[in-house]
Length: 88
Image (tube, rainbow, N blue to C red; front, top):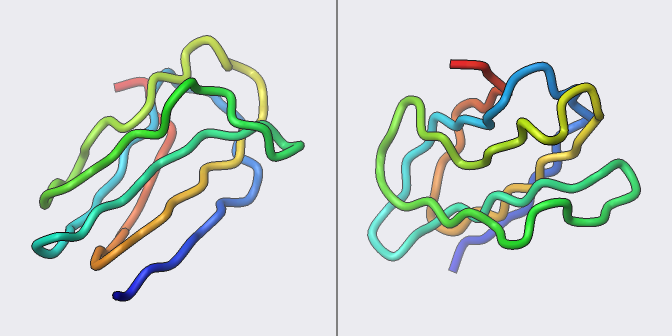
């Protein structure tokens, strides 16, 4: 099994959602967790992504506007091409 973890640098929340451009293989997934800068989760549950999407909304972060977050991605048989904090 190929699995890895990626953590973003701190990102200031200027939008209301986190989106990813990603693709998973059969049996693969991406878990998306939102943490504060101290490393504590700020959402109750991670978002589990499977599929092939260019702009998939994976978290609502409107309540974190103006704060900095760290996005943790756990990937298994998956590719993460990009992520963004967006208002659209």
